[in-house]
Image (tube, rainbow, N blue to C red):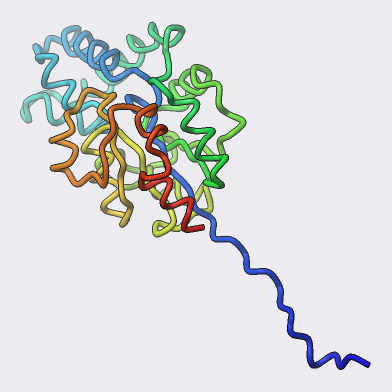
Length: 239
């Protein structure tokens, strides 16, 4: 006769939820230079001569901060919203031709297959993100998607990654950011997140490492090929 008080078995331990927060522009979608051109035209339309190389280095930063960095402090800031709107309209011309960076779709699926939660964490508005999601064709592997409306402040503030953690049901210690700009690294660092960076957005490996990237790869394909040894692979194995 078995005593009810002598049970040795216990309920199974719940697996820790781990995941990856993916930036989109320049990381999963080859759009950094398209944004650069769109911003250049928007500034020119408003009468501002801003060199493309200066614009490109700030792609990934929030629109408000980007404009503030590139235009004189004594400008009429009432025009800033119109410049931002012009950039959006000009960038929309490219939506139909947006393409994923090399290996982007396969990397997202590899993360899911490894048991990782996948969250898109974009500072772009919802309509732009919708166009990029269509280009990716990977909605079936996404747990959540956050856009500019989910963040009070844009990068380099940490708001968008904080929103992505919440949307994915993740803790900072159980997640990694994948991005392509120093702003991704700075935003992640403020939340205690490591960031893996890709040079597919046009920022050099040395600059990304100087910013504090935990690892740097050429593009999603290169990260996919080194998945097991990468911070993403180690995160999946820890679960």
